[in-house]
Image 1: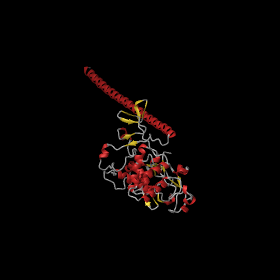
Image 2 (image 1 turned 180 degrees about the vertical axis):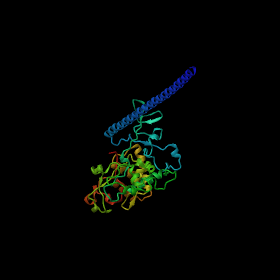
Image 3 (image 1 turned 30 degrees about the horizontal axis):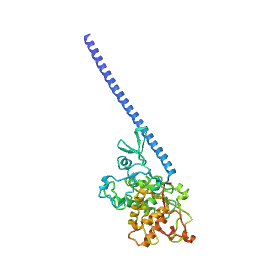
Image 4 (image 1 turned 60 degrees about the vertical axis):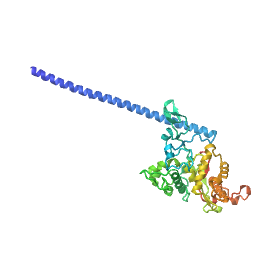
Length: 396
């Protein structure tokens, strides 16, 4: 009888211990589950708050941009400003003493701008040791804006409506070379790339690989044109797909005449070539070099050296006084031509100024139709053997 009682007690003890173990495991599991659910709820809440803060930043930017555009289209207070940090300036590969700082933050990430690598668009204050554009309710909900206008970039869809050579391929190659001039491009393997820069001379491939309606995303340069993803990241702030061909076809601002034979106005093409103007006030230095380099007509050509100095002078001038219109830009060229084209004869300087003005002007005055001296142009677009695209002075 005693033995049976002892067995019953042993069984009861084992059962009690087992139940306690199960309860302990369940308790730990419930506690862990509750902790995970609390973390998930917190993460979800943080994600929602971050999303709404970002949306608030976008709405803030749109409101400010609309107000600034209405008050003064040439206002550039929204421009995302970048500057090389001390390490970049001291880097022997960085030639800051030769190529002017453009004060445009192309190529500078938001993370770098937040910690001193530049100034975000609509800079407001420094919060939590970060440069920010604004906040929502409190210092825990802050946003940093990086704003560019698409007219400060080269549109890879220019000329998509024509099979003729639009010279966009050379513009892209010259952009890549200009990026390489300032600081030689180092590829993903850590090696210095060739002097063609990050696009490696792929300008023609990029143009010829375009879908009929043009690129729908810059990412398609990787999938369709053979540009490496790391290379695209390097040049993304200098390129755009906007405006798309549908918008350019529907707006005469983007429709420009083309002559099929240089110097012969009778070869005026009744169709049009779609081109996107570049904003002279906000374009980064490499885009300016690509805009000017290679322009040719009247027996003269804008050399790489000419384009570098001209881009430098444009950057220096617009820091204090943005260009307001074509007349202002023409006066600037006249005042600076001795500096920009210092190695050229006086007559060639005048020719180079003329072809720069003609290239940048969307208006065409045919000489044979304008014999009157006041409106006569010694050179017009028919005389350009190499052109790029027109210029503008504020985003649109």
